Length: 342
Image (cartoon, rainbow, N blue to C red; front, side):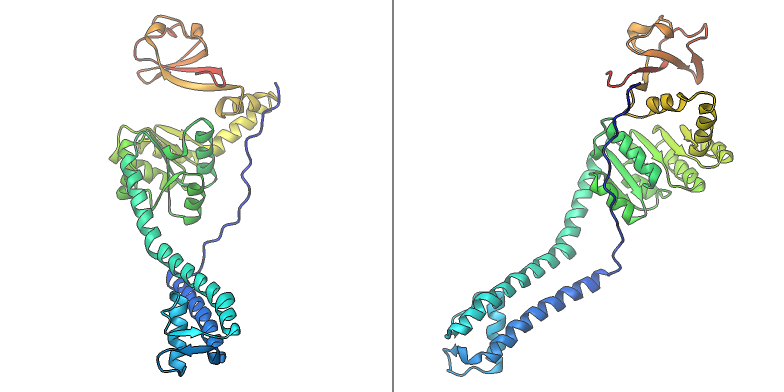
């Protein structure tokens, strides 16, 4: 087997939530603006002889304050003007950059504290209205991130994935990939409703705790009984609870990893073949689909272009070696086929 082509590596990124509150950030911006205005004020005051007041001819401290504020915020009214070369150069090379930076501070503050929140609220509301046939991932830790990455590698657009998590760092990672996010506890009805659970194609539950995973599955099943729910469970004894909670698929990474390792001890290529089956970059792929009308009456072994492995009929699994492995109307076919085959 030729070596696999490694997928694109994600550049490691250090993230730490800022400890500065919005009020403190605003205070820093105001202080920066005052410092810049203070520099302009001091320069005008020490070189006040280079200014001329066209009203009364005398330049007082209040005149300097007035002239500084008018010059920093506008271009002036002409009642007080610089008349010496030094005063004009000070206005050109100091006050003009101060004016630019002060306006940037004002505009940046307006965007950060008003426009951005309004825009994000409108954008998320618009996205939620359009959500349909999407995949929801509850929990964006290592398992959830890998699930999202595999979905994207399989051709699912990031815009059709919604991540629900309480950690802002996780939501930042998801948003950078173009994935829609919902901040909140997925065990609450309102949070799953905001993620569009009623219109979702599927739900993947990977919160990292079995009790939370079971509760999310219960909540989802109550809100949308038709949506398939795949749950990651850490402890084997909790798989029954997840099944009772309505999980359609239960994956135990610990148990599966142990079984794969044990199987690999009897054959060096078993793990490699299984990896081919479950990942998008292998040579072969598993596919689940409804039986097609032209296949009715055919044996599972004779299906093409893939190789039929199993039929699901009325909750019963039928292997290709069984006598009853003849395709009937309503059967679900599990087949293996070359990667990239439509």
